[in-house]
Length: 213
Image (cartoon, rainbow, N blue to C red):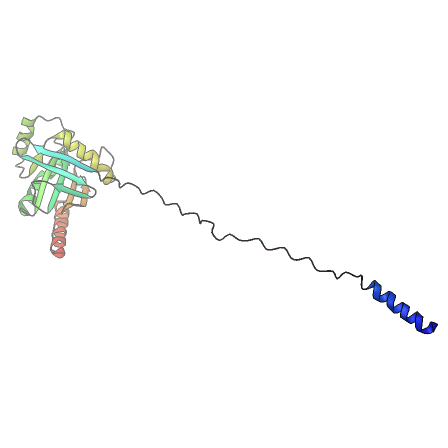
């Protein structure tokens, strides 16, 4: 009888106590941080628009009391001589006290006569204290056949303007001849040069005109 009772009692004790071991669970992983997708994207800053720089316009009144005038207007690299129709314009800075200037007068007369209607030769008197009467006498004695502008204030303004463009010192040597073709700078000669050299450039400029048509 006792053999039956003891096993039964042991079974009851185990059944009454049950399983007191708690099942451990892994801690849940923290939720990942949320990435906000509605964050406004910073706008790209736009550079302020620059105001256009106005183009400088320069005017020079190249005049003679006896022979009228030509208003030279310079805008960027364009040179417009009013009252002149010829495509080639030769501007010659000179003084009557300058021997090389006086020496080239006959050669300039030859070019003006030979290429009449194709070139316009213009003498600009600068740095000279000759009276208008004495200047007219000089022009007559040399039989100058081209335009002489004796408004020295304007002539010297233009000389001061053009010198740095030609990379010359402000008080450049004389004579100085500048050739313009259809309102554009073409070439220049500082000091006395042979008539044939100027004529060669005139011929080349005329060829350029024909080739552009």
